[in-house]
Length: 204
Image 1 (cartoon, helix red, strand yellow):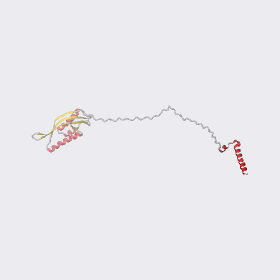
Image 2 (tube, one colour; image 1 turned 90 degrees about the horizontal axis):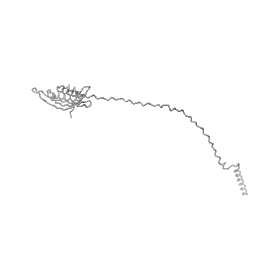
Image 3 (cartoon, helix red, strand yellow; image 1 turned 30 degrees about the vertical axis):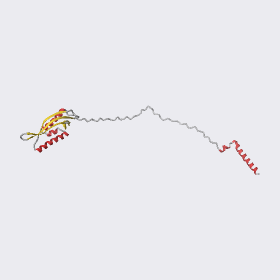
Image 4 (cartoon, helix red, strand yellow; image 1 turned 180 degrees about the horizontal axis):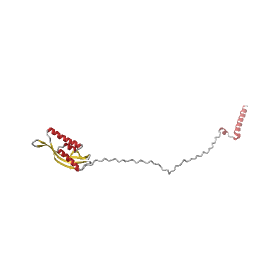
């Protein structure tokens, strides 16, 4: 009896499976896996490019002019001209004439700058010796040779060969106390338009 029961049940199950598989011709797998939906591609909208306004190429380009630098001419300082040969020799000759006549202020007036300081030292030395000896010396220029040289810029040198002596009056006779022989160069330049001795240096 039990065998007949399981056989009848098995037949019923097989009949149901066959029925389901043949129903309307459907595939059993189609029920388990539903069909994948198909997506239809919609046509993309047409994009119209609207051109912007076109600038005419004939419009000239505006350029900013580059300013030209101003060149201001710087005035070149001009040095005063050198004194002439005659002017240079005349002022040196006048200098020694003032020394010979013991016009020391006159000698100083023909100098400028360093030469004035040098002459002041000479004058101070003469006066100092006169005070120490208690006698006034007689200064004489016994020899003087002048030779102007080519100018160097605004200065004209004058070569000088001079002999200067100091004499003292002893009452009965005049005695030479001291003699100085010198070879020097007197530099002469125009100072405010007037020739002046600006330096006295030993000739090398």
